[in-house]
Length: 384
Ligand SMILES: NC(=O)c1ccc[n+]([C@@H]2O[C@H](COP(=O)([O-])OP(=O)(O)OC[C@H]3O[C@@H](n4cnc5c(N)ncnc54)[C@H](OP(=O)(O)O)[C@@H]3O)[C@@H](O)[C@H]2O)c1
Image (cartoon, rainbow, N blue to C red; front, side, top):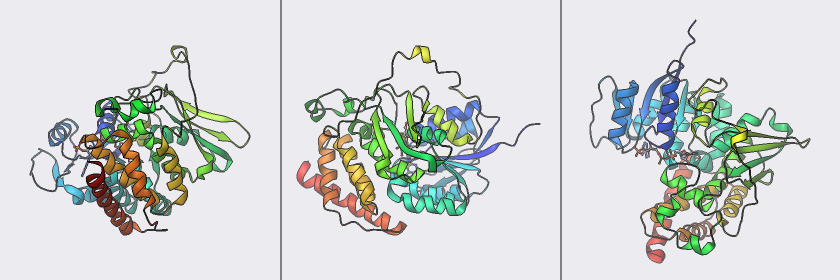
Protein backbone atom coordinates (compact mmCIF):
# COMPACT_ATOMS: atom_id res chain seq x y z
CA UNK A 1 0.00 0.00 0.00
CA UNK A 2 1.38 3.46 -0.93
CA UNK A 3 2.00 5.62 2.16
CA UNK A 4 0.61 9.17 2.32
CA UNK A 5 2.91 11.83 0.86
CA UNK A 6 4.21 14.46 3.25
CA UNK A 7 3.21 17.96 2.13
CA UNK A 8 5.97 20.52 2.21
CA UNK A 9 6.63 24.18 1.36
CA UNK A 10 10.05 25.78 0.98
CA UNK A 11 10.65 29.37 2.00
CA UNK A 12 13.87 30.39 0.25
CA UNK A 13 13.80 27.74 -2.51
CA UNK A 14 16.19 29.73 -4.75
CA UNK A 15 19.05 29.84 -2.21
CA UNK A 16 21.83 27.40 -1.38
CA UNK A 17 19.75 25.37 1.09
CA UNK A 18 16.57 25.73 -0.99
CA UNK A 19 18.09 24.39 -4.21
CA UNK A 20 19.73 21.48 -2.36
CA UNK A 21 16.38 20.73 -0.70
CA UNK A 22 14.80 20.46 -4.15
CA UNK A 23 17.54 18.02 -5.18
CA UNK A 24 16.67 15.94 -2.11
CA UNK A 25 12.95 16.14 -2.93
CA UNK A 26 13.50 15.14 -6.55
CA UNK A 27 14.93 11.84 -5.31
CA UNK A 28 12.08 11.46 -2.80
CA UNK A 29 9.22 12.41 -5.12
CA UNK A 30 7.16 9.41 -3.99
CA UNK A 31 7.41 10.58 -0.36
CA UNK A 32 6.72 14.34 -0.63
CA UNK A 33 4.31 16.70 -2.36
CA UNK A 34 5.44 20.30 -2.77
CA UNK A 35 2.71 22.78 -1.86
CA UNK A 36 4.59 26.08 -2.24
CA UNK A 37 7.95 27.51 -3.26
CA UNK A 38 9.03 30.98 -2.19
CA UNK A 39 12.06 32.93 -3.34
CA UNK A 40 13.40 36.47 -3.15
CA UNK A 41 14.60 38.33 -6.21
CA UNK A 42 15.75 35.45 -8.44
CA UNK A 43 12.45 35.24 -10.30
CA UNK A 44 13.93 33.36 -13.26
CA UNK A 45 15.12 30.47 -11.09
CA UNK A 46 11.85 30.45 -9.15
CA UNK A 47 9.92 30.15 -12.42
CA UNK A 48 12.13 27.24 -13.55
CA UNK A 49 11.63 25.52 -10.20
CA UNK A 50 7.86 26.02 -10.41
CA UNK A 51 7.73 24.60 -13.92
CA UNK A 52 9.69 21.54 -12.81
CA UNK A 53 8.15 20.83 -9.40
CA UNK A 54 4.59 22.10 -10.04
CA UNK A 55 3.74 23.62 -6.63
CA UNK A 56 0.24 25.00 -6.04
CA UNK A 57 1.65 28.34 -4.88
CA UNK A 58 4.70 30.38 -5.72
CA UNK A 59 5.76 33.44 -3.75
CA UNK A 60 8.01 36.17 -5.15
CA UNK A 61 10.00 38.22 -2.66
CA UNK A 62 9.52 41.62 -4.23
CA UNK A 63 6.18 43.03 -3.20
CA UNK A 64 4.14 42.91 -6.42
CA UNK A 65 6.63 45.07 -8.35
CA UNK A 66 6.70 42.63 -11.20
CA UNK A 67 3.59 40.52 -11.83
CA UNK A 68 4.54 37.06 -13.04
CA UNK A 69 2.56 34.19 -14.55
CA UNK A 70 3.24 30.54 -13.85
CA UNK A 71 0.80 28.10 -15.33
CA UNK A 72 -0.89 25.92 -12.72
CA UNK A 73 0.36 27.95 -9.74
CA UNK A 74 -1.17 30.82 -7.83
CA UNK A 75 1.44 33.58 -7.53
CA UNK A 76 1.78 35.39 -4.22
CA UNK A 77 4.02 38.34 -3.37
CA UNK A 78 6.17 39.61 -0.50
CA UNK A 79 5.79 39.05 3.24
CA UNK A 80 2.00 38.67 2.92
CA UNK A 81 2.54 35.86 0.46
CA UNK A 82 4.91 34.15 2.92
CA UNK A 83 2.25 34.56 5.65
CA UNK A 84 -0.31 32.93 3.40
CA UNK A 85 1.96 29.96 2.70
CA UNK A 86 2.83 29.51 6.37
CA UNK A 87 -0.85 29.69 7.37
CA UNK A 88 -1.86 26.99 4.89
CA UNK A 89 -2.67 23.98 7.06
CA UNK A 90 -2.41 21.72 4.07
CA UNK A 91 1.35 21.76 4.84
CA UNK A 92 2.74 19.04 7.07
CA UNK A 93 6.09 20.79 7.23
CA UNK A 94 7.70 24.05 6.15
CA UNK A 95 11.39 24.35 5.38
CA UNK A 96 12.49 27.85 6.43
CA UNK A 97 15.59 28.43 4.30
CA UNK A 98 15.66 32.19 3.78
CA UNK A 99 18.67 34.06 5.07
CA UNK A 100 18.58 36.81 7.67
CA UNK A 101 15.72 38.24 9.72
CA UNK A 102 13.12 37.48 7.03
CA UNK A 103 12.94 33.97 8.48
CA UNK A 104 11.41 34.96 11.81
CA UNK A 105 7.85 35.92 10.77
CA UNK A 106 7.20 32.86 8.57
CA UNK A 107 8.48 30.63 11.37
CA UNK A 108 6.11 32.24 13.87
CA UNK A 109 3.20 31.96 11.39
CA UNK A 110 3.87 28.27 10.87
CA UNK A 111 3.97 27.72 14.64
CA UNK A 112 0.66 29.64 15.08
CA UNK A 113 -0.87 27.28 12.56
CA UNK A 114 0.53 24.13 14.16
CA UNK A 115 2.79 23.28 11.21
CA UNK A 116 6.11 21.51 11.89
CA UNK A 117 9.28 23.29 10.82
CA UNK A 118 12.60 22.25 9.34
CA UNK A 119 14.67 25.25 10.36
CA UNK A 120 17.74 26.32 8.41
CA UNK A 121 17.42 30.02 9.22
CA UNK A 122 19.57 30.40 12.35
CA UNK A 123 18.78 34.12 12.71
CA UNK A 124 15.25 33.15 13.84
CA UNK A 125 16.62 31.62 17.04
CA UNK A 126 19.41 34.15 17.50
CA UNK A 127 16.87 36.99 17.40
CA UNK A 128 13.95 35.41 19.23
CA UNK A 129 14.92 31.95 20.48
CA UNK A 130 13.12 32.26 23.83
CA UNK A 131 9.83 33.27 22.21
CA UNK A 132 10.01 30.87 19.26
CA UNK A 133 10.90 27.79 21.32
CA UNK A 134 8.20 28.52 23.93
CA UNK A 135 5.53 29.07 21.29
CA UNK A 136 6.55 25.89 19.47
CA UNK A 137 6.44 23.89 22.70
CA UNK A 138 3.03 25.27 23.67
CA UNK A 139 1.66 24.55 20.18
CA UNK A 140 3.20 21.06 20.03
CA UNK A 141 5.14 22.05 16.90
CA UNK A 142 8.36 20.19 16.10
CA UNK A 143 11.35 22.32 15.10
CA UNK A 144 13.99 20.11 13.51
CA UNK A 145 17.30 21.84 12.78
CA UNK A 146 18.85 21.79 9.31
CA UNK A 147 22.19 23.33 10.33
CA UNK A 148 24.51 20.30 10.09
CA UNK A 149 25.89 20.73 13.63
CA UNK A 150 22.47 20.97 15.29
CA UNK A 151 21.09 18.26 13.09
CA UNK A 152 23.98 16.08 14.28
CA UNK A 153 23.23 16.86 17.92
CA UNK A 154 19.51 16.22 17.32
CA UNK A 155 20.44 12.77 16.01
CA UNK A 156 22.73 12.00 18.98
CA UNK A 157 20.38 13.00 21.82
CA UNK A 158 18.10 10.42 23.40
CA UNK A 159 17.44 12.20 26.69
CA UNK A 160 18.68 15.77 27.08
CA UNK A 161 18.61 15.44 30.89
CA UNK A 162 21.46 12.95 30.71
CA UNK A 163 23.66 15.15 28.53
CA UNK A 164 26.66 16.86 30.15
CA UNK A 165 27.71 19.02 27.22
CA UNK A 166 27.28 19.71 23.52
CA UNK A 167 30.40 19.70 21.33
CA UNK A 168 29.95 21.76 18.18
CA UNK A 169 32.52 21.24 15.45
CA UNK A 170 33.81 24.08 13.26
CA UNK A 171 35.72 23.64 10.00
CA UNK A 172 37.67 26.81 10.84
CA UNK A 173 36.91 28.38 7.45
CA UNK A 174 39.39 29.62 4.84
CA UNK A 175 41.65 31.45 7.33
CA UNK A 176 42.16 28.69 9.87
CA UNK A 177 45.90 28.43 9.30
CA UNK A 178 46.45 31.95 7.93
CA UNK A 179 47.94 34.79 9.95
CA UNK A 180 46.02 37.73 11.35
CA UNK A 181 47.76 39.90 8.72
CA UNK A 182 46.50 37.61 5.95
CA UNK A 183 43.00 38.05 7.34
CA UNK A 184 43.39 41.81 7.60
CA UNK A 185 44.15 42.01 3.88
CA UNK A 186 41.71 39.33 2.74
CA UNK A 187 39.65 40.10 -0.35
CA UNK A 188 35.96 39.28 -0.70
CA UNK A 189 36.89 36.54 -3.15
CA UNK A 190 39.35 34.88 -0.71
CA UNK A 191 36.81 35.14 2.09
CA UNK A 192 34.11 33.47 0.00
CA UNK A 193 36.38 30.48 -0.82
CA UNK A 194 35.22 28.12 1.89
CA UNK A 195 37.31 24.92 1.98
CA UNK A 196 34.42 22.55 2.76
CA UNK A 197 30.98 24.05 2.24
CA UNK A 198 29.32 25.79 -0.69
CA UNK A 199 26.87 28.19 0.96
CA UNK A 200 25.20 31.59 0.54
CA UNK A 201 27.49 34.66 0.67
CA UNK A 202 26.46 35.97 4.09
CA UNK A 203 26.95 32.69 5.96
CA UNK A 204 30.24 32.10 4.10
CA UNK A 205 31.66 35.39 5.41
CA UNK A 206 30.40 34.47 8.89
CA UNK A 207 32.20 31.14 8.57
CA UNK A 208 35.45 32.94 7.77
CA UNK A 209 35.22 35.13 10.90
CA UNK A 210 33.79 32.25 13.00
CA UNK A 211 30.77 34.45 13.74
CA UNK A 212 28.76 31.62 12.18
CA UNK A 213 29.98 29.34 14.96
CA UNK A 214 29.01 31.99 17.50
CA UNK A 215 25.50 32.17 16.04
CA UNK A 216 25.37 28.38 16.16
CA UNK A 217 26.27 28.35 19.86
CA UNK A 218 23.29 30.66 20.50
CA UNK A 219 21.11 28.50 18.24
CA UNK A 220 22.15 25.36 20.16
CA UNK A 221 21.38 27.02 23.50
CA UNK A 222 17.78 27.59 22.39
CA UNK A 223 17.21 24.35 20.51
CA UNK A 224 18.51 22.09 23.26
CA UNK A 225 17.94 24.30 26.32
CA UNK A 226 21.60 24.00 27.27
CA UNK A 227 23.66 26.43 29.39
CA UNK A 228 26.30 28.32 27.44
CA UNK A 229 29.03 26.93 29.70
CA UNK A 230 28.05 23.44 28.57
CA UNK A 231 28.32 24.22 24.86
CA UNK A 232 31.87 23.77 23.56
CA UNK A 233 33.35 24.49 20.15
CA UNK A 234 36.13 22.40 18.64
CA UNK A 235 37.83 23.04 15.31
CA UNK A 236 37.69 20.03 12.99
CA UNK A 237 38.95 20.99 9.51
CA UNK A 238 37.72 17.87 7.66
CA UNK A 239 34.04 18.49 8.55
CA UNK A 240 33.34 14.78 8.86
CA UNK A 241 32.27 14.80 12.50
CA UNK A 242 29.33 17.18 12.35
CA UNK A 243 29.05 17.56 16.14
CA UNK A 244 28.83 15.44 19.27
CA UNK A 245 27.39 15.23 22.75
CA UNK A 246 28.96 14.01 25.95
CA UNK A 247 26.72 12.13 28.36
CA UNK A 248 27.09 12.49 32.11
CA UNK A 249 28.83 9.08 32.28
CA UNK A 250 31.59 10.20 29.90
CA UNK A 251 30.26 8.52 26.75
CA UNK A 252 30.62 10.70 23.67
CA UNK A 253 28.22 10.19 20.78
CA UNK A 254 29.02 11.90 17.50
CA UNK A 255 27.33 12.01 14.11
CA UNK A 256 29.54 11.57 11.05
CA UNK A 257 29.02 11.86 7.33
CA UNK A 258 30.38 13.43 4.17
CA UNK A 259 30.26 17.24 4.27
CA UNK A 260 27.03 17.74 2.34
CA UNK A 261 23.91 19.67 3.34
CA UNK A 262 21.76 17.13 1.49
CA UNK A 263 21.94 14.77 4.46
CA UNK A 264 20.81 17.19 7.22
CA UNK A 265 18.17 18.71 4.93
CA UNK A 266 16.77 15.25 4.23
CA UNK A 267 16.87 14.30 7.91
CA UNK A 268 15.05 17.49 8.96
CA UNK A 269 12.22 17.16 6.44
CA UNK A 270 11.81 13.38 6.87
CA UNK A 271 12.14 13.15 10.66
CA UNK A 272 11.40 10.79 12.36
CA UNK A 273 11.61 8.58 9.28
CA UNK A 274 14.75 7.86 7.26
CA UNK A 275 14.74 7.14 3.54
CA UNK A 276 17.30 6.24 0.92
CA UNK A 277 18.42 9.62 -0.52
CA UNK A 278 20.93 11.16 -2.89
CA UNK A 279 23.80 10.84 -0.40
CA UNK A 280 23.07 7.31 0.78
CA UNK A 281 26.13 5.03 0.79
CA UNK A 282 28.46 8.04 0.40
CA UNK A 283 30.59 7.43 3.49
CA UNK A 284 33.65 5.25 3.90
CA UNK A 285 35.87 5.20 7.01
CA UNK A 286 38.79 3.79 5.04
CA UNK A 287 38.72 6.70 2.58
CA UNK A 288 39.05 9.25 5.38
CA UNK A 289 42.78 9.51 5.99
CA UNK A 290 42.52 11.36 9.31
CA UNK A 291 40.31 13.37 11.62
CA UNK A 292 41.96 16.39 13.28
CA UNK A 293 40.68 18.46 16.18
CA UNK A 294 42.05 21.64 17.77
CA UNK A 295 40.98 24.39 20.12
CA UNK A 296 39.54 27.51 18.51
CA UNK A 297 41.81 30.56 18.53
CA UNK A 298 39.72 33.15 20.38
CA UNK A 299 42.27 35.90 19.67
CA UNK A 300 42.19 35.46 15.90
CA UNK A 301 38.45 34.88 15.91
CA UNK A 302 37.10 37.25 18.59
CA UNK A 303 33.52 36.92 17.30
CA UNK A 304 33.23 33.57 19.03
CA UNK A 305 33.89 35.19 22.41
CA UNK A 306 31.49 38.03 21.63
CA UNK A 307 28.72 35.58 20.68
CA UNK A 308 29.10 33.70 23.99
CA UNK A 309 28.98 37.04 25.81
CA UNK A 310 25.83 38.12 23.94
CA UNK A 311 24.17 34.76 24.54
CA UNK A 312 24.90 34.86 28.27
CA UNK A 313 23.55 38.42 28.55
CA UNK A 314 20.42 37.36 26.62
CA UNK A 315 17.45 39.63 25.88
CA UNK A 316 18.15 42.03 23.03
CA UNK A 317 21.94 41.46 23.16
CA UNK A 318 21.76 38.71 20.54
CA UNK A 319 19.39 40.80 18.37
CA UNK A 320 22.00 43.55 18.42
CA UNK A 321 24.88 41.18 17.68
CA UNK A 322 23.05 39.65 14.73
CA UNK A 323 21.85 42.92 13.16
CA UNK A 324 25.16 44.80 13.53
CA UNK A 325 27.14 41.87 12.14
CA UNK A 326 24.75 41.38 9.22
CA UNK A 327 24.97 45.03 8.15
CA UNK A 328 28.76 45.00 8.49
CA UNK A 329 28.97 41.78 6.43
CA UNK A 330 26.85 43.38 3.69
CA UNK A 331 29.20 46.41 3.71
CA UNK A 332 32.20 44.05 3.40
CA UNK A 333 30.55 42.22 0.50
CA UNK A 334 29.96 45.58 -1.22
CA UNK A 335 33.70 46.26 -0.84
CA UNK A 336 33.17 49.20 1.54
CA UNK A 337 35.07 47.86 4.55
CA UNK A 338 37.79 45.31 5.36
CA UNK A 339 37.19 41.89 6.84
CA UNK A 340 38.48 42.83 10.31
CA UNK A 341 36.27 45.94 10.32
CA UNK A 342 33.25 43.63 10.60
CA UNK A 343 34.28 42.79 14.15
CA UNK A 344 35.34 46.36 15.00
CA UNK A 345 31.97 47.72 13.87
CA UNK A 346 29.87 44.97 15.43
CA UNK A 347 31.65 45.17 18.79
CA UNK A 348 31.38 48.98 18.90
CA UNK A 349 27.64 48.83 18.28
CA UNK A 350 27.28 45.93 20.69
CA UNK A 351 29.14 47.71 23.49
CA UNK A 352 26.94 50.79 23.19
CA UNK A 353 23.65 48.83 23.23
CA UNK A 354 21.29 49.17 26.18
CA UNK A 355 19.98 45.65 26.60
CA UNK A 356 16.22 45.12 26.82
CA UNK A 357 15.66 42.08 29.03
CA UNK A 358 12.60 40.30 27.64
CA UNK A 359 11.69 42.00 24.38
CA UNK A 360 8.47 40.95 22.65
CA UNK A 361 8.41 40.33 18.90
CA UNK A 362 7.54 43.92 17.98
CA UNK A 363 10.35 45.22 20.20
CA UNK A 364 12.76 42.73 18.62
CA UNK A 365 11.99 44.05 15.15
CA UNK A 366 12.24 47.67 16.37
CA UNK A 367 15.61 47.03 18.02
CA UNK A 368 16.80 45.16 14.94
CA UNK A 369 15.90 48.15 12.72
CA UNK A 370 17.47 50.67 15.08
CA UNK A 371 20.72 48.67 15.32
CA UNK A 372 20.90 48.38 11.53
CA UNK A 373 20.54 52.17 11.17
CA UNK A 374 23.16 52.76 13.87
CA UNK A 375 25.54 50.30 12.19
CA UNK A 376 25.10 51.85 8.74
CA UNK A 377 25.72 55.32 10.21
CA UNK A 378 28.89 54.12 11.94
CA UNK A 379 30.14 52.52 8.71
CA UNK A 380 29.45 55.70 6.74
CA UNK A 381 31.06 58.08 9.21
CA UNK A 382 34.07 56.12 10.42
CA UNK A 383 34.87 53.28 8.03
CA UNK A 384 34.09 54.33 4.44
N1 LIG B 1 23.95 27.26 2.92
C1 LIG B 1 24.23 26.43 3.89
O1 LIG B 1 24.95 25.44 3.70
C2 LIG B 1 23.66 26.65 5.28
C3 LIG B 1 24.00 25.76 6.30
C4 LIG B 1 23.43 25.93 7.54
C5 LIG B 1 22.54 26.96 7.79
N2 LIG B 1 22.23 27.82 6.78
C6 LIG B 1 21.30 28.92 7.06
O2 LIG B 1 20.21 28.81 6.13
C7 LIG B 1 19.75 30.11 5.77
C8 LIG B 1 19.84 30.25 4.26
O3 LIG B 1 21.20 30.19 3.88
P1 LIG B 1 21.65 30.06 2.37
O4 LIG B 1 23.10 29.83 2.39
O5 LIG B 1 20.77 29.09 1.66
O6 LIG B 1 21.36 31.55 1.85
P2 LIG B 1 21.22 32.08 0.37
O7 LIG B 1 21.87 31.15 -0.59
O8 LIG B 1 21.63 33.49 0.39
O9 LIG B 1 19.64 31.99 0.09
C9 LIG B 1 18.73 32.82 0.74
C10 LIG B 1 17.32 32.56 0.25
O10 LIG B 1 16.46 33.52 0.85
C11 LIG B 1 15.70 34.15 -0.19
N3 LIG B 1 15.29 35.49 0.19
C12 LIG B 1 16.09 36.54 0.46
N4 LIG B 1 15.34 37.63 0.73
C13 LIG B 1 14.04 37.23 0.64
C14 LIG B 1 12.80 37.87 0.81
N5 LIG B 1 12.72 39.16 1.13
N6 LIG B 1 11.66 37.15 0.67
C15 LIG B 1 11.73 35.84 0.33
N7 LIG B 1 12.88 35.17 0.16
C16 LIG B 1 14.02 35.86 0.30
C17 LIG B 1 16.65 34.16 -1.38
O11 LIG B 1 15.95 34.42 -2.58
P3 LIG B 1 16.69 35.02 -3.90
O12 LIG B 1 17.99 34.32 -4.03
O13 LIG B 1 15.69 34.64 -4.97
O14 LIG B 1 16.79 36.49 -3.71
C18 LIG B 1 17.17 32.74 -1.27
O15 LIG B 1 16.20 31.83 -1.74
C19 LIG B 1 20.63 31.11 6.53
O16 LIG B 1 19.99 31.50 7.70
C20 LIG B 1 21.88 30.30 6.86
O17 LIG B 1 22.53 30.76 8.01
C21 LIG B 1 22.76 27.69 5.53
